[in-house]
Amino acid sequence: MATRRQNRVNHLLQQEISEIIRVELSDPDIGFTTITGVEVSPDLRRAHVYTSIMGDETEVRKTMAALVRARGLLRSQLGARVHLKYIPELIFELDETAREAQRIEALIGQFQREESEQDIATGERGQGSAGGNYGATIARIAELLKAGQPTVILIHRDPDGDAVGSGLALSLALEQLGQSVPVLCSDPVPARYHFLPETNRITGTVPQDFAVAVILDAGDYSQLGELADVLGRAGRVVWIDHHRTNQGGGDIDYLDVGAAATALQVYRVIEALGARIDQPIATCLYCGLATDTGFFTFENTSAEALAVASELVRAGADSHWIAAQAQGRVGLAAARLRGRALASVATAANGRIVHAALTPGDFAAAGASQEDTNTIIDLLKLIAGGEVQVLFKAVSHNHWRVSLRSGTKDVAAIAQQFGGGGHVPAAGCTITGSLPEVRARVLRAITRALDGR
Image (cartoon, rainbow, N blue to C red; front, top):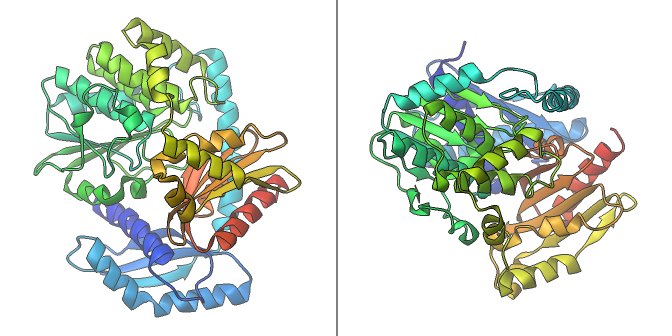
């Protein structure tokens, strides 16, 4: 059985190798490939890299040969990215089980959603989508945090309201217990969340020494960005998240795909800590819960989410003010960017797919940034006949962030095919290639899902 250190190195190498292949390698023989796993030897000298390759046998052979040729470059790039005494020899192996695993996972996901609906109907607290009770896990987390060891909280890059609100709420709660706990993020807090109390707690500066790291609202290590490396310095890692695609990897994993938001899970943890949910904490938690449920209009809005929201309002959260701040007016640049996105709207699969794209030229012409893309995809959901909505956003030349939404299909399973993940109705991924090439790949995968293939 792999040790905790091996597991962390496995996850780190999988993340970095995937990123290098997507961004750094330019070999035309490398087709669409997904790194499905990495297993390092106990001495960390060898790493078996499992890869799934889309295409016929010829494309698979060409891609495998190209990956073998690129091993030297990959090791060199890894040496610049990860802090290991020895960069392992890379042994590529074809993962032929990926497609079957995706089919099985989709069946499991359907079962879990049905179980989650049953839990909501019976009004059970602390029940996950698979029917498991998380009380013992929450108690373990509370016991660890109450011990007072130096702690850091990590939230995902490009943070949303759930990540920011959850991180600040837990930090404020631990302060009541006499601890000063920073919230680490590789990106700054978006301007629309500056209204939340004490956002200065969120920083990219890592303390010199800490014993416990708490990951919040990140579906995998890659979502932590450059901060993923600091986890190797933690004695204990706690992972709290609600994304269905999260595979875990902490010492204590609290992964509840039935939770409407990570803020709901943090609410449970704060209760177990015995901290008082005062007005600042209630404001942060309400923001996280409201933004991740589309202010209680999305499909993930549960009876528990509404009940906890009510408790937070009683504790001092101003629901109207929070909605006005988080959903407030947009700047001129964001308005122009929306116009350019809507001007690009097109459909596929007989109107069942609605898609739009924002190129580097669109961002430049509008004077806008990635932050200004928020809520644009929600406008696509207003177009009649669409079952799946897609927004392609240029990060840099031939580097695209793809946002997926649907009220009928599991878009997280689609995003996973491209190395991404998320929730059943809302997910995303990052893909390298020209816009026509990337768009064709994604639309082809969505069409297959709509046709039940």
